[in-house]
Amino acid sequence: CFCQVTGDLDDCACDVETIDDFNNNQLFPKLQTLLESDYFRFYKVNLNKPCPFWTAGSHCGSRHCAVQPCSPSEVPEGIRDSAHNKYSAEVNEQLDECERAEHLGAVDVSLSAETREALLDWSKHDDEAERFCVVDDEESPDSQYVDLLLNPERFTGYKGPGAWQIWNSIYEENCFKPYTVRRPLFPDTFQSSSGSEARSFYSWLEGQCVEKRAFYRLISGLHASINIHLSARYLLDDSWFQKKWGHNVSEFMQRFDSELTAGEGPKRLRNLYFLYLIELRALAKVLPFFQQPSLKLYTGRPEEDGKHKELLLDILQLARSFPLHFDETSLFAGNEKEAAKLKEDVRLAFLNISRIMDCVECFKCRVWGKLQTQGLGTALKILFSERQIEALPTSSAQRPRFQLSRQEIVSLLNAFGRISTSVRELQNFRSLLAEER
Ligand code: FAD
Image (cartoon, rainbow, N blue to C red):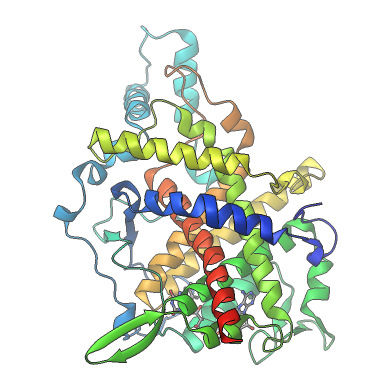
């Protein structure tokens, strides 16, 4: 049993050493190179969307929260041209053809009956129903490209009630939890909203079905990853003549040491590994989609684009070769009706979480929060589209039933890049702690 989410919450006997070795020595270096490419470094995001749930406080005034959007000339034309980037160029042409045909109420009679049927069938396909997260309207004038390399995820100083409110609502309202959190936030005990019975959060969680436990662990893993990043790229010196960023071991220990967190820290790190395995599994599964010759990582520079597609395929093959993959078949595996209902519950809860990201007051945190929830949402979409991915057409005349937009591709790889970096950072912290002793 390797990291299956059946049984007790802590049955995840993750073989941490195997993951560390695979990630740190093989996958991480390749992924870093890929994420430095133009295709992956520019992420389009709308930072001006209002918070849909509460009146958010004024935007965080910390200069470390500021984000510098790109001027149009900084972004390659091929990326800015959305006609190339919704889907691959070839599929777009077919889509246009189909939309035209639909508009005119007719289809091209020169096409075979099978192709016509496939085109019309695809035109009915609704992306929204498949999505696990809200995507920003790329055509909105408020959406801007951000260069992720120039705006790295690191310590920003965002903390206190604003940040807690975000984490609290994510856990409280979206983890299917029937208990309200007692003050102070996130204690180990929860009080039933219907009575005075207090019980351990973990004993409550263990009584939940596999999917709900898995969902909680994904969110907790994401939370752990963000807090590892801010500890690894901490502002160590903020004097007027220099800025020094680096590892802050005591910050890390306060968040993850077993004694300092009453045993919670190690569980949170295990959740990070759980998240790693889920996203790695999605990468392994999506390989056939990227193997389609018509799928291009289009920036308008064919030589570079070809090289980066090769590197991406190499990474996905590597993900496939990982020997201890998470087995997601146990998820949504019960009675068909119940499974579909649960899957929809998870999808809607995840959509909600992606909306909460518009309430994050620190812009830098908001960019990375949106990117990582979108990336995880894309990973879930992949995991639950196995049949559609397997049925990808071999001929370009047929319309595929599974698609990823550039935004989804960029967020998927960058989100996994964050988790992979966190796993790598854990090794750095271990070495620093060993030196201190
Ligand atoms: P918090 O991390 O705010 O956690 C609140 C409570 O949740 C803790 O007291 C604990 O009981 C519980 N908890 C903590 N970790 C976990 C876990 N892994 N699983 C389950 N429960 C947990 N700060 C930056 O400096 N840089 C960033 O890029 C950044 N990005 C952020 C993105 C988002 C979306 C959010 C909501 C916050 C971000 N922050 C960032 C803020 C950061 O995550 C913390 O909220 C902040 O540092 C305050 O930390 P804290 O010690 O008060 O506990």
